[in-house]
Amino acid sequence: MSIFVNDYYKDIMKKILLIAFTFHFLNVSAQQAEEILFEKTTHDFGELKEVDGFAEYEFKFINNSNDSITIIKVKASCGCTTPGWTREVVPPGQAGFVKARYNSKNRPGTFNKSLTVTTNHASEKTKRLFIKGKVIPKAKSVLEEYPIAMGGLQVKYQSFNLGKVMLVDEPTVKTYEVYNASDSTITFLENVDKPKYINVSFDPQSIPTKSVGKITISYVGSQRNDYGFVSDNVVIRTDELIDSEKSFSVFATLQEYFPPMSAEQLAQAPQLKIENDMHDFGKVNQGDKRTALFTLTNTGQSNIEIRKAKSTCGCVTAKLKKQIIKPGKSIELELIFDTTDRRGIQQKSVSIYTNDPKKPAQRVHVRASIQSN
Image (cartoon, rainbow, N blue to C red; front, side):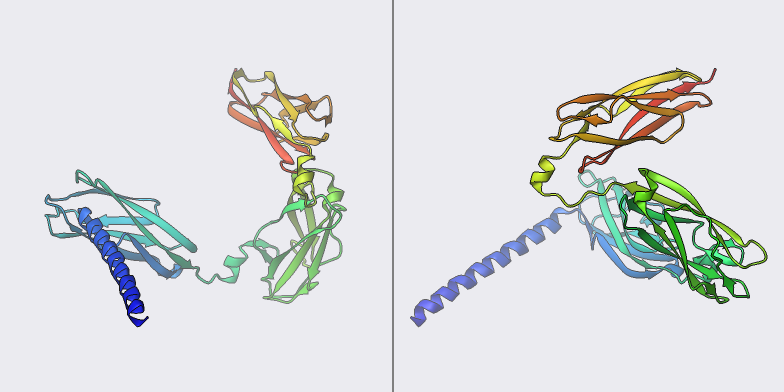
């Protein structure tokens, strides 16, 4: 029994040694095949501080061929990386380098860049090198953090962007910071100009000097009764003697809410298909009105309900004879493009909002090259 076990383990060890030898041979062969042999092709800087500015690394290589090598050029993948390299001819067996200099100023966050090395070598004309790392952002001053002045208050942006807002009764809520840069406490007043579907609150109501407060925007999408990108205006007032009124834009992208659906429910849902979503009028005289027709087809199993056809420009009018498309049926969407006061290449689009749960918003486009009279 012991002899059998020993022979078994000897056989296993032979196989392990054979595999290790094979990998070693393949690795050596691969290195020998590289005639421009870099010590490594990727360098990780790790963490860099933004305030430090530049960081450098030299990729060293050996001319592993029988001929002299010249580096013709090194091209970086972005302007943040400055390359340098051995300008002299590198004889066989001699060393050279390619230098990567990365500028971390104003570039916080992770990065991954490349350098393409072009040589005169017959079989290895190009080599790619890579640098990566993470830039730790510099600490910002209060005025850098809140750069926009509105009276005694400093804000990051003069708008409140809510992003996606569902057309439901439950409000979308987001909070934005403000900084009191004045030498006195600033109190928000209750008198706020706003639409009925937007609510504004403050925390605290009075912000002490050199302190941060919060403005909270609450938006009820179902009360807005619109689709796609929308903009509203809100005017906030404070007890300041000068510049007490502060006007903000409120942005939102309104979308219909679809509850989670099973595969069977999706199979029975409506589905909008637009065969060709682009119409090019070609050359058009300024002031002309041109019409394009788009075919909208329901390839689903239940009725499509067209909620809205919304243009990105007042110069394009969308017309629909029907708002309902039955399964297997089609209707035409008519777009009228008025080129008055427009010139050059123009491209406009119309968004079509439907109850298609997979693609509730689709676009069609018109394009023209408008010639001045």
